Amino acid sequence: MEITKTLGEFIVDHQNQYPTATGELSALFSSIRLAGKIVHREVNKAGLADIRGAAGGDNIQGEAQQKLDVYANEKFKAALSARGVVCGLASEEEDSFVAFDGQRSLQGKYVVLIDPLDGSSNIDVNVSVGTIFSIYRRISKTGGPVSLEDFLQPGRAQVAAGYIVYGSSTMLVYSTGDGVNGFTYDPSLGVFCLSHENMRCPPEGNIYSVNEGNYVHFPSGIKKYIKFCQEEDKPSGRPYTSRYIGSLVSDFHRNLIKGGIYLYPTSSTYPSGKLRLLYECNPMAFLAEQAGGKALAGVNQPVLDIVPSELHQRSPLIIGSSSMVDKACEFLSEK
Ligand code: P6P
Image 1: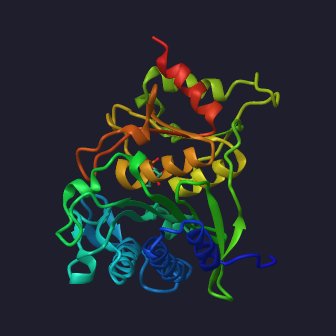
Image 2: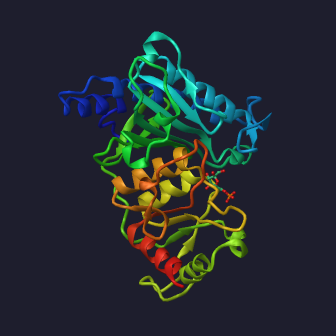
C-alpha cells in the first residue's frame, strides 16, 4: 500500500484547520495511537506470551478479566495520564472513574471513556478484538478534581470517538465530528497510515449481525425482523447474510464498510440490553451517524440522546445502515 499520509500528519493537518486548536486533542490522539501500538504487539503474540486466559479477577460486570483486558486497560490508562490533557478516565475494567492526579492532569480539558479490549472472550480463539474510546470536554472546573458529571454526558456531546480493531490488520477508525477516517497500522514502520478516507456507511446492506442463540428471549418485533432478514424477497433475490463475530468492533467495522445492521436488543435476559452505553454504544453511535448511518436504542430513540445516570449502565443497540435500522424499527413498533 502506498503510504499517503500517516495518522500523525493527518492529525496535524486537521488541527491546522482549526486556528483556535491548542494541540491538546492532538496530544490526546497521540496517546491513543501509542497505547494502540503497544496493545497491538501483545494481541499479536497472545498465543506465545503468558497473557492469554483469565487474569483471575472479575470486573464490575462480573466478567472474568482476561489478562489482556487488564494489560490493555493499564496501557491506555498510563498513556492517557502521561500528557496532562486528560483529567480522568472511565473504563469497563474500572469499578469507578479514575481521577488522574498531578498538577498537569488537573488542568486537563478532556475525559476519556474506554472499553480497553472489547470482545476479549475471543482472545484465546484468535478472533478479532478491539479497543473503543469516547472523548468529552470536562464540565467540572479546570484545575479542580474531575467529577462523575464529567463522564455522564449524553453521547451527542462527544468531542471525538473511535476504535482500534486488532484483526487481520490493525486499524484505527475515528471521528472528531466531521466525518470518519480509517488508518491501517504498518508494523514494519510502526505507523498508522490513512487507508480509508471519509468512510461512509452504505444506506442499504444485506448483512445482519445478532446472536440468534438469544432468539427465544427477544421481543416479538425483533423476532419478526430476524424472520424478515431470512426471507427471499430482497432486491438481491436472496435472504440477508448472517454474520456475528461476538466482537462489536469487528461486526461494526464490517457493516460500516459493506453495509449491514448489528442488533443487541433488549431481551428477557438483558431487559436493558447487554452493551454498555458510555464506552460501547455511544462511541459507535457517534461514528455511525458521522458516516451517514444510524444508531438507536429503540423506536425513535437515538442512542446519542440518552442522558446517562450511571457509569456502567446498559443500553439496547440497533446500529448500521440507515434504511436497515429504520426497517428493524418498523417491526419493533408494530403492536
Ligand atoms: P454475546 C463482547 O463481550 C460484547 O460486549 C460485544 O463486543 C459483542 O458484540 C457482544 O458483547 C457479544 O455478546 O452475548 O452475543 O456473546
